[in-house]
Length: 145
Image (cartoon, rainbow, N blue to C red):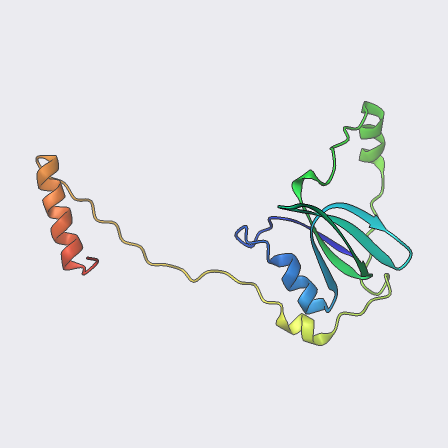
């Protein structure tokens, strides 16, 4: 099961969870406000405009959650000390019994926007009316209007 927040690093469009589910071939359950994992399935209560909706899917599944998914729990001082000394296990896909298909590994690519060449021109003048006239001339010359 993979869990995503509602807004991710995809410019806030909320498509990362759905795209991940499509690539993995897993079910997608979005806008989850409550999650219940059963034996081989997961049931979520979705938060929608009309109220709440209960949906179920077989595991593995991709879930996107809403901000109201849970109340934060603040650890005690002793809990913080114990956590600082805890060893965090790191598992590979093979440790979990999964193998990444070559097709998925080949499709993932880093998407960086192309570099933009930006030039700035400062328009100055003796009065706001003169600056406005120069700006209007420049806009017309650039065929913006």
